Structure formats: C-alpha cells, structure tokens
Image 1 (cartoon, rainbow, N blue to C red):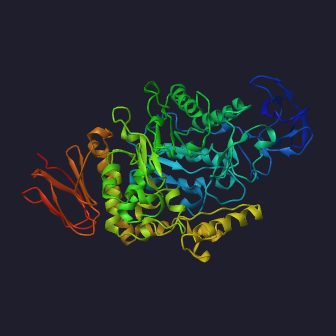
Image 2: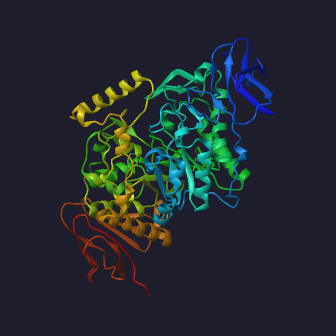
Image 3: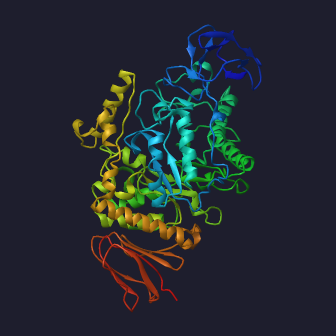
Length: 586
C-alpha cells in the first residue's frame, strides 16, 4: 500500500486519486482547523505508475509534492520510492561553513552532457582544486530543457533532463564519496509562471505582496499554515531524504511574512533539529539584500539563527576595485575606502547612506556576535555574470595578474569563499541568461524584455543574446579543454596554491572579524594582516611602495610579480601585483 495525501481546500465536493487511469475517491481529513482541506487515501499503487489528482471531477493535475515528473511539470507524476536507492555515505558527517570553500555550478552548463551523471565525471577536478562544498543551482522541475532554474514550478520534483531524482541521488552520493558536501539552491519566494498548478489546489499564493518575479507565497494570510508546512517539509526532504548537506535560500528579502515566528526562523530551527536527528551537520544559508547580521546571529542573541548568508557588498567592492566599473549599484563602491571596508567586514552599507538607494541601508556588524565564515562571498556568481547584457566574465576583460590579485583577496579573506564554475581557470565562455519557455508568448516576452532592458544602456538588440536560443546555452557551457592551455592553466595553478595555503595555514581562514587589520598605503592598494601573514595587493594604476614597518622576518610565499622585500621592510609593489608573505622558518 502507498499513502497519498494532498492539501486541496479549493475542492468543493471531492478529490480523486487518478493512478494509471483509474479514479479512486479520497477522504477529507477535516473541514476546519489546520488540516482543513487535506485529502488522503492508502492505495495499492506500485512504483513507476503515473498518477495525479482530480478536483471535483476536473482535469488531472500533478501532485504538488510529487518527486518525479518524467514528462515535465505539464505531465503527471510517477510514483517513486526514495528508499530504493542504496546509499554508500553511511559514515558521512556533513559539513560546516567554517573552513568550507564553495563552488557554484549549473548542471545544464557545467558539462556538455548537462546531467548529474556527466557532472560526477568532473568531481575529481573539484577535489584537486581544493573545493569542499558544491553549490548546485536550482533543480526543481520547469517546462522545457534549459534554464537557470529560478522559474521552477514543482519544488519537490527534480528536473528530468538533468537525470530526475535518481540522478540527483547518485550525484549527492558520489560527492560524499569524494569528500565533497552538497549545497542545493532552493527558491521559496515565488514559482515560475508556466506549469504552476499549485494555485488550483489552494491559497498557496497571495496578491497582498509583489515580488519582481511573480506572485508571492502566502506565508501569513488565511490558509498559510499548510503553505508553510509545504515549504518546511520540502526543506526536510532535501536534507533528510536526499542527504543534502546545506540549502541556499534564494532572495529571502522577498519572503513576505508578518508572523511573530517567521518562516526563516522555523527553517533555522528545523535545520538544527535535523542535525541532531540525522547525526550529521546540516546548514541553511540565505541570499538577502537587507545587509542584516541578525539573519545569522544566534537565536539566543535575538537573531534568526541561519548558518550563513550571501554578502554581495564584498563582491561589489572587489568588482569595482578590479574592473573600475561604477554604473548602477557599483557606484556606491567607487571609493578606495570601500575596498578596505569590505575586506574586514561583510557589509559596506551598515546603517550608512547608499547613493544608489537614496537612503540609509543595512545594520552594523558586531564582531562578537557573528563570525566571518557565516558570510558567503565571491568574485563572481551566477547573478553577477548572467545578469550582464552579454554574460561576460571578469576573465573577458582583466589580465591574468589582475585575476590573480582578485583571487588572493578572496581566498585569504575571513569569509567563506565561493567560486563560480570555470572561474578557477578564467574560462573564456560567457555565462548568459537563457530560458526554454514552451509557451511561445512567454518566450517572446522574455526575449523582448531582455533586449529592451539593455537597450537603455546602449546595447543594440543584436548584441544581447536571445534567451530562447539553443546557441545561448551552448555558448554558456564550459569548455574543459582550455583548462590545460596557457593563461588558463596558470590561473588554475594559482587557485590551487591559494586554496592549499588557506587549508594548511589556519590563520588565512581565521573568521574572527575583530582580528582582521587592513591598511591602505595608497588608494586601491591594501595590506591585509592575517595573523603572522601579510597579503599585499596593488590594484592602482602605478607601482606603490609598501611599508611593512620593519617586518623583515617575512618571506614571500606566493607572488604574481617580481616584488622583493627589502632589509628595511619595504617592498615596491607593481600595478596588479599580489604577494603573500609569511614568517621565515625558524
């Protein structure tokens, strides 16, 4: 027997389970209270049988909690036994953020195979690089084949073209076998517009709030108890049943929740409970635009208690310093002082004025209440590359030396670093915005909207890649052959050496924000004190005389230039120079 349950308060009289074409009436559990609208039945339905639900004799809809959608979200579910998979990771202990190095990848463009199984073949590269946690972009089912994943419409189902639920189980198990943790990017602030059937069942959405991407989930209105349970059970499924180690919650500032106990805090509590129940560490991080350290502060200190959050200010400050770009929100960071600030604290805007927003933004960080490792930072990520008109990476315009300088600042920081796939070798392939909407009108609207958006910035229509074209996906797929070539190989070796230093010398990964000292000998040139180590990077246009104040007991451990430390503790650092110094042995 198999248990089926569906919350369908919008059904007026009946809900039928339709399995393999046969209709069976379900039983209403309650007509009031928190279980109002919950229909259940135990039925003798074997595995690999197509099924769905019919409300009041209407068309058959997919199961909101269905795990397998072989024909995509417009088709029916197939029964799937999660417990049938034979896991080999019984000794796996999970992973904490402190000491982790994340690697963000998109299954559809990480390899030309575009599947979980194809990605497994490249895991040894990540191990050799020094990565410890793979962050997988959203895999919830969406119509078509290609997409970023943020328009998923079936949060419980794994996108079939990637390999479905069985493929993801194999991927997680393979990662654990190689010592890699897995973080899954999940989206609870909205669902995509095409193939979204939740609204037919009940009040999953609300028009009381607007998000930039569509209707917001109903987290605080009538009927929201079951909506919140839907999200919390989804969190539980990924962490418990799929053995995922961490979740990254997309854009939590668009989770509109007026309750005293917020959904975010409930998720944080659930993660702690699961860590205890499973006997392994599971963590939840969040993307937030609020610059609020309370997101990660412990609950006994008045915080929400999530394990970590993305800190985009660090990206913005590093990007401006490296590229000189100052348009839009980058304008706030077009000041040498911003570089010094974001190397010692995650938020440049911390209760301070933002010219871009035309208001004060953020809240100050108190180093005694948070740790640096609770903030995930990057030089590049899917948003910051893909939301550019042509999806160009930093490697498209920066020299090898400047890329090395940026990597040194990132990988010796007190934060948790994250790389974007291909960054470690300066991939020449862009990462562009692509979709595969099966609704032609929607696809055309996305195409026109994308081109109109960038026309305002001076881009001709033909310069903006067509999101609906297969060539855009092809262009965005990593070319692994170039890893062995010239500057690509040199940059890869630089990343490997930096990550080796970070792993073997704990002071370079020390996450005590109060202990970080940053000096600026000249604008755009910094000396970062990391215990006994000195990180010297010059992003100015000319050489800078760096004074280490008589610290002559240092030796150069890693350098991308010909700089040398004089007997007087001074060093002439050329433009784009990056030098890591450490104590002389003995």
